[in-house]
Length: 366
Image (cartoon, rainbow, N blue to C red; front, top):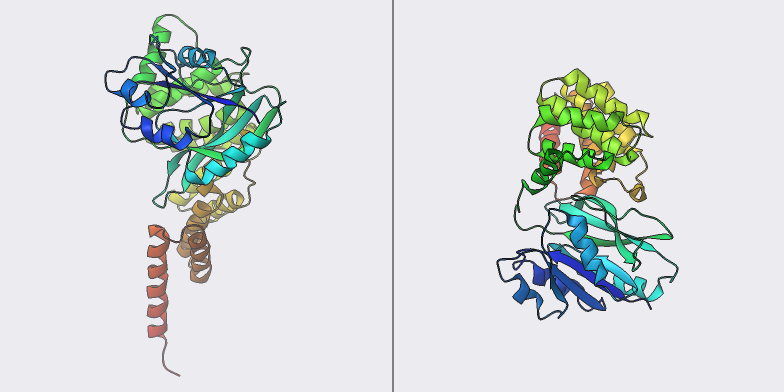
């Protein structure tokens, strides 16, 4: 059986660190905590779990800190988690079985990362991340922000999921400030950094500033296809916010030049036509989303609802607008199979019931 070093970098995480470590402590063989300047009781919280606690001077570089944490590992594989991550009970058995059965020639294990959830606790945003990495100095973190270990070697995929359960806003300006500092120092951003810098501008509602950076990334001959496809969606939203709707639609359609349609983009295009009351075109794109194959292993950000619930619900709206009540109701019921407790589904159900009652009441007696 392989052995695993859990390697974490932390700062002021006293509120969530125990929750994380309690979920994983008995499944790993070593816990390494690298503190980057806590002023709360993070170190005291960590000490019952491990004596391998190190201090590291923060340099606005996540990769540097993570590489330092990996350098302290002594087991076969390194695993990373953030303090506000948790391995839920449903994944613990799978985790142990994979640990017992993993082929020793595996270099990386990719696991799902669930980062957003609906009211029922189901993931609505997820993607694969490198989670177990062979303890070898050739595998290094890169990128000051949104750091990554470029996947290579013998890569295995698992449906085990780590859940990101953030409890507070954190520092919303941290990442943007790091990128701005890099630019102020005259450093040129690589395509991946360009993509994430534009996203930070977008999240800060600096749409006018974000657009040229997104466009620069799209025009670059380099860059990951999945990032370029998502960039089309984010850049289009910037154009929508600036009331440049025609350019927004063209930007969404540009995503088709990079690869086959993604359901996420199909839903965005469908939304454009729905909002412009072009219901037949909207139906086409929502139907396309509904029949698009979901490929989690592409590595891109996945919005699971875009492959069933959202297009079904929006098809319900489109057919209702076209006066086809029965077909609209049929799609709403299909959406309800995906999310039985959905407020939208339940509201629609009441709406259709009242419409049908009204129609029956209007029918003259025989």
